[in-house]
Length: 286
Image 1 (tube, rainbow, N blue to C red):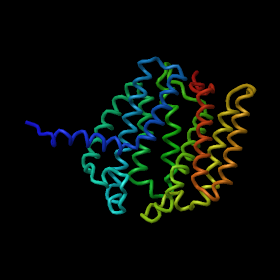
Image 2 (image 1 turned 180 degrees about the horizontal axis):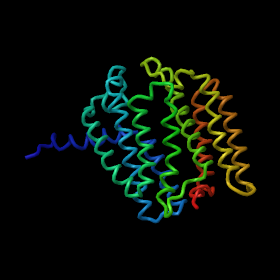
Image 3 (image 1 turned 30 degrees about the vertical axis):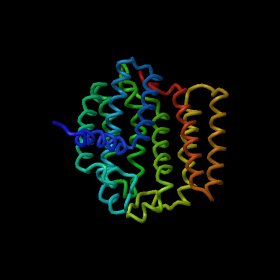
Image 4 (image 1 turned 180 degrees about the vertical axis):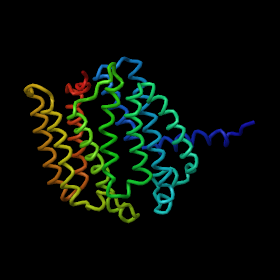
């Protein structure tokens, strides 16, 4: 007979796993991919497969990150991490990460072999970041690879396996670099105290704050000006808005780093809007 105390353990661990999977990035990346799939014209069934592959891939990445960082999080007293606060054992988070990865592989290849290779390249890059590259000067590279691979995963799952336009891939890579800088900026000083010396940590918070708008606004320019034909009113307006927001974030960020981060998020939202409204998805099809 199961006692009431025993019956509450699984629910507690499920909640801890939900916290460990980095739910914010998981929801954003999965929702973005689903929107890209719809925009590119995937059929409903293929959209579900694409979204499921990305969801399981993101789960594996988040759990890998928390499981691998468990010792450092415990040593530094990170109470916001479920493993560090004793809500779940690191071994169970590792098991969840490998289980999610095992589901991700067949779901990715169910979208087509080329699409599967593209998506699993993104997942492998993210795992490489978690396990090794996060603390090196190459910490930006997995973000660039993974963000560029997402639109390729979507379009390669279409009939004829078309590639996205080159400027979509380049903008995706730049968005990835910007996401890396923005994600790390508020935590640079704490990371340095725990021995994490990735590319942004080596640059320092002041340089990162100044550099952060560059990849994001460059991505805005590619997405606004990359499509064939003369741009409409919306694209130049979005590009101008991205430049103004980035400039404001750089100035305000001198006193409050969160302002620079908030501006980067706003520019990234504009970039995603341009990506979803553009015609570069599948533009490489013959």
